[in-house]
Amino acid sequence: MRGALIISLDFELFWGVHPIKTPAEYGAAVLGTRVALPGILQLFREYDIRATFATVGALFFRNKSELIENLPQPPVRYKDPKFDWYPEYLDKEIGQSEEADPYHFAGSLVDLIVREGRHEMATHTFSHCFALEEKLTPDAFRIDLERAMQVAKQAGVQIESLVFPGNQYGEEHIRLLSQLGLRGYRGNEQGWMYEPRTWQGNHVIRRLARLFDAYVNLTGHQTYERGEPKGPAGMFNIRASRFLRPFNTALKPLDGLRLRRIKRSMTDAAMHGRVFHLWWHPHNFGTHTEQNLGFLRSILEHYRFLRDKYQFQSLTMRDCYPAENIENGAASGGLIQTTG
Ligand SMILES: [Zn+2]
Image (cartoon, helix red, strand yellow):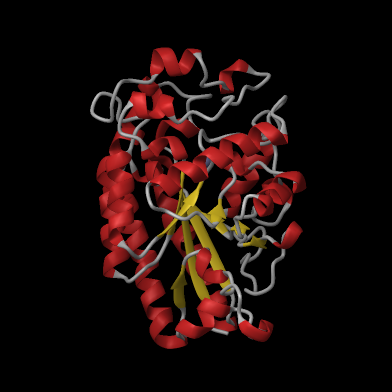
């Protein structure tokens, strides 16, 4: 089997950061996404990359009345009110339209991605629902997710894959996915520092270990074989291999190491017919946009080299699910093998 580069992007704008950041602290990165995202799409076109955009359902809207009409019933509530976006946050912090509030609406950007015609639109729940935060029941998670899928469907998008917000999940959440007709999810990287945790449980040692792992080889290449479902309930676990960390001025001298670590893992995948799954958020490119796009270009140059040398290919998460209803249950790998 040919090796594959999978790229997934968690598209959430302010829905993913409001529990810990204010617009004053993080608004520039979120606003910068409006420049960064077209830049990312342009590079994907240039290097013939197909990516998966796991998009928060609320971002599909262009104004507050559409959002309010489509709220999950009931909206999720957490024990720690800092996670709540309903009702006070919705009332006070969310503006009337995408023009007035570019932090919480992104209908025009969703259109940009869909119009490319090459990428997979996946879900990141309706409201960036944190599955493991206290008092959040699996049922509340299901209601939020179900609404996200309906909103996408109204926009003509069929959802098959999910990325769990905050990389938080348990087996009961994965079982829900199969009940809702999804086919796969992005599991976390392997290693103790990547195990699903609440915000609170994500202490500094774990975060530091993940930071080191981006520069030096702590946890291996994290590449793997594509094929049968590896998650519960027949769900395909298209596991993450590496988070593409954003450019950081203080760590600039180490950027060569960061790039080398990614390129070596890609080479490992290409040579051994395995998957390397890289992920980040479009807003990670919202500041230092030029440096981040330049770094991505270096990664994609290496992809092109591996494609020519080892027939390395670019796939979405969905491309990794076998075609359904194959007669006689023939050929797993489905879509992938037929395009190979
Ligand atoms: Zn997220």
